[in-house]
Length: 73
Image 1: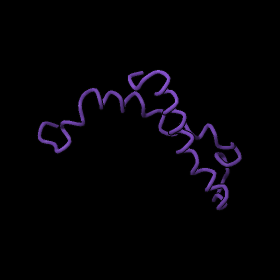
Image 2: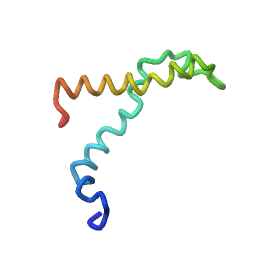
Image 3: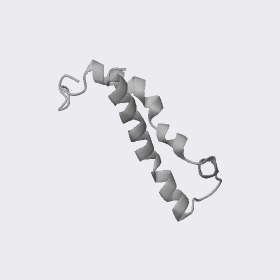
Image 4: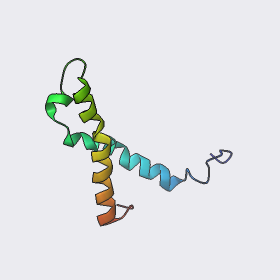
């Protein structure tokens, strides 16, 4: 990474944080109904709109944890 444009940003600490946080990438799905998450076939427009909310739910969840405990935990 020494020759990379992003070598100042992609540090060992950054890579470690990505490794630790990757399992949380869809944590917002905890706020989505199982009827939608487990549905076989295509979602309706309304279901799809609800599914898209998982990103906001996840952001709010992780932001709350970060605010309470700091970003290093």
